Image 1 (cartoon, helix red, strand yellow):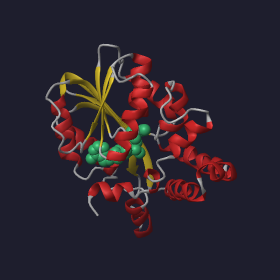
Image 2 (cartoon, helix red, strand yellow):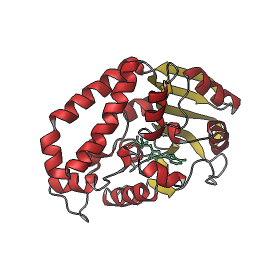
Image 3 (spheres, helix red, strand yellow):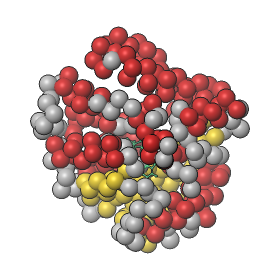
Image 4 (cartoon, rainbow, N blue to C red):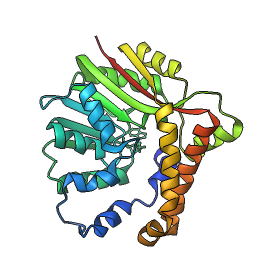
Length: 276
Ligand SMILES: C[S@@+](CC[C@H](N)C(=O)[O-])C[C@H]1O[C@@H](n2cnc3c(N)ncnc32)[C@H](O)[C@@H]1O
């Protein structure tokens, strides 16, 4: 299986018709216009939904003149939220063609295509122009990318002098047991999940300065446990709308993540930095 095939098999990235089904449940047909707000419960694939993106925009002091790169943009939720609320230009880079196609369609139907440009490509090799962004952001994507030093070197080049970055991602708090590592690799598709110190060192080696890190585990671990409980509570309704297979795929992912936090090996981290 190639890289795209391997990641596409991860439970989070199966049953991709869930957005179309979720929209249908709101009475929105496959070609109907959409208000961005109607998507927010479905298109934010990270912790704390749009609150996290709003917080990032504030931390980076983003404004309408900013050009932002979103690395691992999924179905485009964070990119659309930034464009919709800040009016800034966002380039959304996504590896998986199926997710990219959904993202393009949703953005067009939200009439945000004048602000959001979707690119399908691998952040490790996609030829982004030098010095073309004021900031790059990434939520829960770097963990999937095998060569983090190379990734950061590429992304550093895309920033103008003084440009900033903001990452939220998984990290390793204690050495993974063989069982944990198996789950991290096969269920989470976590190929680069390291200590916060190693993560920070990779940014510094790529030339980023003022690297600030925050351990988000005390916030994310209970969030993951509550997410699993809520998911199970909604079993019947979700399975009726989306099918039992779609319910189970997500339940497996949420269960593994909650178990890894509970065992103390998995954590969450925010990193912010700038280039000189
Ligand atoms: C957990 S999802 C998060 C999506 C989005 N950031 C969000 O928060 O809604 C991570 C995304 O990163 C993408 N990704 C993984 N490796 C990538 C790569 N090498 N280049 C670009 N995107 C990648 C995955 O395909 C997936 O859509």
